[in-house]
Image: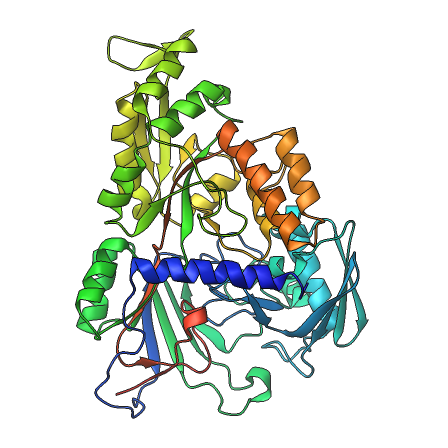
Length: 519
């Protein structure tokens, strides 16, 4: 595992350099005083409000980032790893990993966070977390002793540690005992404990006085107050007026305005991630026709999306991973509306009286599942696809509601962003998007050639071979138009008011125990 980290650090450096070229806000704002404020309550806005506090729930949004839950391993913004509840980890054999836990930790209830409890938590994720089944399904967990968790896989799995970063460890026994009550009153390990929770709207939490046995320095923030902020302009105005201290879904337009304020706000923009369009080949017969997928891909005007929609804070996508990473392909689709129209003509999709193409009684008309942050993109694509005879209508939903709809396959075309990004688990990311039968392969895409390469990649430890296998798989996916790749963007950063201190740039969207408020 440690041998392969060199390529991931190189990848992270490329991503960070790309980000620096795109521009970013001040990370060291000047405040009026370095004295702590009397009230240490951090107020913030986010689009991703949880509907449940149970970590296995599909809509348990931001409970890791907000300090309620913790994972065994933490992934930094630059795609490297750091310890979480586990102090270290190693491969004992190619199919056996050992994780050493911190000793003496407890859940909020006082129950010990030992290897047996972590085993039970991961097994509950495996059984009940819809997104975990395809990832944890082939793993077996065992408590070797109180502080040693052993994980056995069916095949060698170099990316295993990266895949454990999203699973909040919780008291599975209490979850079974409390039942549905666990959604609003869980038993977790974080430094913030909820005291008020309105699903999808507000979350108030207070510092846990027994966190990790009261470590030196303790928790500086005493309280967090999170609320839903669907409108990007309203989130920015709340921060500027002092009604909020932070927001965690900074859009491109708002980023520009924050940066114009000079040193007044800190704006942390993430490494670029690929924006893509999901195509439901399971539900929509027309999308099984490669000619239709190619037309959607070719008709998408990436220059217009980059220069107009993103004000230049993006680059045209070359494939699943952002260009410049060692495992990304060098070139992607070149927009060509005339070619898109010719492909549809050749495949028998002819324009009707209203300009919409049809074949054998089936019209090329699709609903685009979208939500607030993606609606401008959906509107732009609607106009671009219309030019080649493809009709669409918007099907906007509340952001969090889209999670279950995608999982259920309740969409035709979607702007939903499980966005391709720099990662330490190349195979795991490709597998989650494209492997036949995987839960998070929302559109039901299937290609035996891609499956074979992804499976081979998943057992490969050599970084150079990993990169080559990833490129081979992406070339197949590009040619087959598994998804429509549009652009790599630095959208959805974090913005903080000047009085917020202790933000860690490599975990910029996380509330951390060392954060505090100045006067």
